[in-house]
Image (cartoon, rainbow, N blue to C red):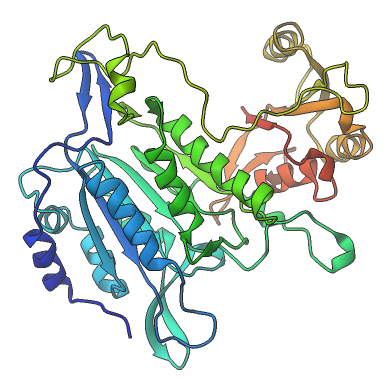
Amino acid sequence: MPNSLTLDTTIEHGFSLRSPQEGAKLGFFETEDGVENGENVFVFVVHYDFKGCAGDWPRPGNNKDVENLRETFGEKRSCRFREWSSPRKEDFLTLLANENKLKRYFASEDDAPSVFVLYVLSHGDEDGVIYTDTPYYLNQYETFNTKDVFDSLEHVFSKSLKFIFLGPCRGKVDDKVFNPNDGQLPNKNSCRVSFEPKARNLIILYSTVETTAAKRDDGGTWMVKFSCDQLNEMRKNESVTKFLTGVQNRIHTETTMFRNQGQTPELKMNSQDRKFTFSCLDKKILASSSRTGTDAKGTNPSVESVKFEESRSINFDWWNPISKTVLRGRRAVIFHQGSENNDQIKSLDCALIKNLGFETITAKLNEAGLNHYCNKLENACWDDYGCFAAFTFAEILEREDGDVCIRLDEIEIKSVGDFIHGLLGPKNDAWIGKPKLFFFY
């Protein structure tokens, strides 16, 4: 059965835990006066192991996840670390929505966190469903939703940078190349793009895209393992974007090259009040770095002169696999609704050709134009190309279900997910592993 304490007992238990004797070493903010270390960092891990549950529900590796996160954030980075096993839905969401309760739980009643990190680890399903291991009927369990999490945090720590790592599956579809002969249906929802949530200083990493399953084993959840590995193996300071891209790359590399199965994380980044950088802990590297400014300790960790190759990086092969002597080309399409002589379109077209070496084409943004270009892409020889980019000038709308859409004409709109899926296409397996860029104006 779940080992869930009541909310008040949990808060007091968290308050009784010893707080770090030194400031956190997760990273720093850039300010007008230099840099400011993120001294007070809350790391909250909520996890459900489903022990004693029937069938395939027990989550092997759950304890390994907690151990890995505690060591990475609590021990190595001196963050205020708290983990809660199997909380009831109401207790978890109540705590998450109350600043004062959270600050007491983390033994920081006088100070809000500079950074708040939340990991939610459990089973999950489509449309944001997350399971608790609180049974309500036979093998049925209470659930909450990712929207509940976002709503609870909406008015909490508004000035703090918040990272949410969501580990549950988002469906049952295996992330693999579409094969019409095995009865698999095209996974259109994996390309879904939504506005949710709309909040400043909020960054979200889903373990996988919508409708697909996340992976784990006895060693833990892959999202946890590789986010910890990225922190532990950093060889220089990294921006938020670079750090999270590194996590995504580790997951993708492991699943496609070593596990022979896929997993594609989804990242959502909202606007931030201050620029945050993750700190490298290697003292030898920091000691050999040149610095121009000073922080409270007389150093500026944001400026380094030492160059290192990224660990586990994989370089894309730009050489044409057939000729071996000619570099692959770059291909781009500019969709528009007005005249292609528009100054913005002409300027973009010129920049793509002259500055970046793209082959470009302009096309009308309507259903006929989309279908025509999709057919051209499916028939293209992709050994000749190493990158594809699509630039779309259109009115951007929000549908009632939260999906981001573009207007094709006065009547018809199309979700961005359907637009991307139509261009990528499940049959275009020659695109796998190649950069694909989409811009919407």
